[in-house]
Length: 119
Image (cartoon, rainbow, N blue to C red; front, side, top):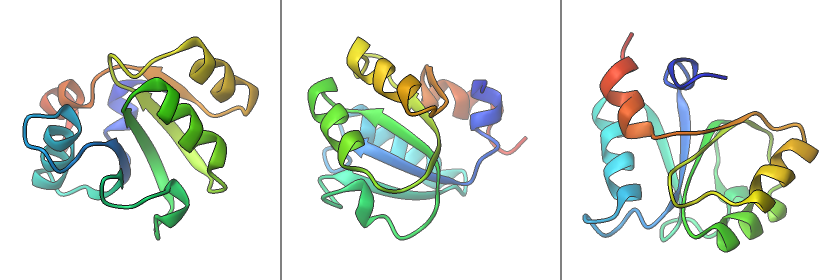
């Protein structure tokens, strides 16, 4: 899956600190909302990915990799794709996603918003 394809999806879940305005998760959340995407937030708003009411098109990891992996392993919901933001990556996360056949890419949703949103 490419970043362009990611930005054609509708339901995003941002995993990270979406409360503090100096955090990238906050910037991603509000960037997506400003462009009309449906956004749920896990970590500071919802406790678990399982608490998201909607289907998950894209899960955006913008959190410490150890906690990101823990949340992924607890998840019982279907996830179409994962974007691993810079700093949120680890070999363990990539191995987990590959083992569970969840498509992922390492990239930046803010770049995707700038290049591909509303196209």
